[in-house]
Amino acid sequence: MKNFIYVLLIGLVFTACKEEAPKNYVTFSGTISNQNSDSLLVRSRTVSKIIQVKPDGTFSDTLKVEPGVFLVYDGAEQARVYLKNGYDLKMKLDTKAFDETIKFEGTGAEASNYLAEKALLMEEVFDIETWFELDEAAFNEKVKESNKTFKDLLDKAGDLDSLFVVSEQNDAISLEKQLHSMYKQKQGLMSLNGKESPKFVDYENYNGGNTSLDDLKGKYVYIDLWATWCGPCLAEIPSLKAVEKEYHGKNIEFVSISVDDEKAHSKWRTMIEEKELGGVQLFAKDDRSFVTAYNVTGIPRFILIDPQGNVVKADAPRPSNPQLKALFNSLDI
Image (cartoon, rainbow, N blue to C red; front, side):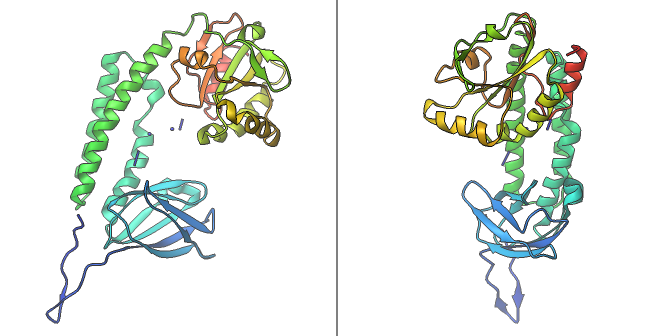
């Protein structure tokens, strides 16, 4: 389970009674061991820059920025860093243990080191799927405990830029609201479990003809709601293909339903061919009744239906989640 968010204060330096002008850029450099790529992508909502990484893993460049949190992507994984003009930030990491080894030194390093610690702590603290199984009082207590954990981390992070602190405090408020919203949505989805599934009717089948949910009765049906433009959907494809191969010939159908707009119809067919997608590939055309019935607000969404047409899990584990196979095994699929 791995899927949650993104002034100028420069001291005066006097030498020989002459004031040195503050830098209007940030210097970003460092060393990457076992690099995944020959470049780094540094980006925010308004800035995107590629920094070349030398064969020995070193890199150095400058950026003119508005103070804020940036994503640094190495071709396989990404980290969050805080950049502000005047900073001289040095990053060091080993991609074989990306999150555990990333460290920052130099001017402005405190905020980025905090972000690195926060990322590790979030993996440790947040067990969202388990939280969603709790009653509301227990869920609220988990959220309260996590808020204190991250507040304590921020308090001990050292001398941080005031704007950064305010931003993190606001992010914490937004995250809490989002968690409560997700919990309510999840409870609504859980109310579908055990009941007859909403239906889709006459969706175009890539192999010809049309297919309805009722056509698939007699087997478990694992549904993937996706679209050709959806990055997280595409990221699940290798895992989906692997799970489908492992359970081939068993009492389960793997059904992928594209929710692309009608204008992307040819792109849908091309992607199926190029990526050699298996299972039952369906196109929803412009019918949104099925996704609406399942209160789908984001994709990919995975749904598991039993041979009688009843909902097993309205929000089933993703193919990349080991809990999916555990679920299948518990059902003797």
